Figure (tube, one colour):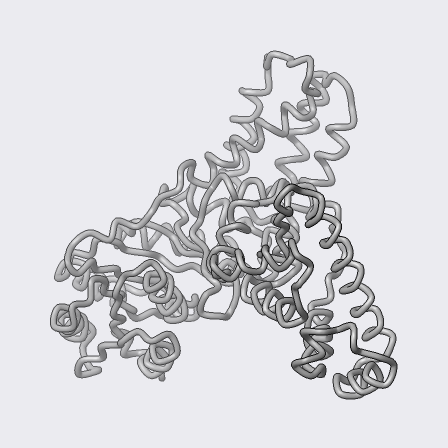
Length: 439
């Protein structure tokens, strides 16, 4: 996500922070470089120019803080302006009415149907009761796709007569009332390109059901095409917020920076993967920090809270304090980490760590290998690893398909951690609770 933009800005800021006082000429060169980086990241020309102009007006004549280098001051100004560019404050959905009606629109192939399923799961996790309405009667298998997704996440889908979109939508709202569903998510039809027929159809649906939220879904991979399309949708449909899908791909990030500025509509969600739970609310301040390589610890904690059971975490902390944690505990932590997303993505969210590992590939398979080794142990061996002698180690290596050295390394690491935790536990009056993994 924003890889190219983030990488270029980080490298440039590193040089900037290294200097002393900045002359006016250096400030001008700094802003010229920032503008170049933005344009190369596919940011809209006018947006890039206005962004740099605002920075220049603030950087010119800025009071020098003795304890902060001039370079860091400019980085701070750029960060603050980036937050503004991305929308300023976080904008939640309105979700007003009973049921609240959410209309989702966008071009075909932008990921509307998948996003609706993700949003349904997101709402369900927040104790809402959504119903999805399959109103895309033009794309082959669109309705069937939504039905399959609904079955996977346990959310009902209303299909009506599968003929006229407006009739399907009205029937879906009636279904929601009968089933006591408090949110209706409407999957409208898309086209390969904007046409008047599509817009008229969307306008009719909007007029008929008066949705509390209208979300425009854009494919982040399409760059400035997504921006141009968003402008037309904003003019005709007057949507309330933008969803950017496929942000886990090799998108340069320019569309995300441009859409909000050009349309005046906030970015509300971003899709970060194929799985149903790969959806994040868009927080401008957090995203600005990610782009500048400053981490995003808040989102990291939120992901952990979503997958970690608090009671189990407390129990694990107690076992860690008394050095009684087992390989079963370790296995459980691995599963929790996998649910949070890719390791590469998680590491980037840790302030001061992600930017130091730039270019370092984190092998996701390592967790798979560790899991295979642990699962090749008997239940008793997982609880009492000290009984694992040479012959048992060979059996575990053969069973997991991993070299004996890897089995030995894992067992040695476990023993070192157990001894360390034992010392820490004895260090306090009542023992010291230490987190393990995500616990």
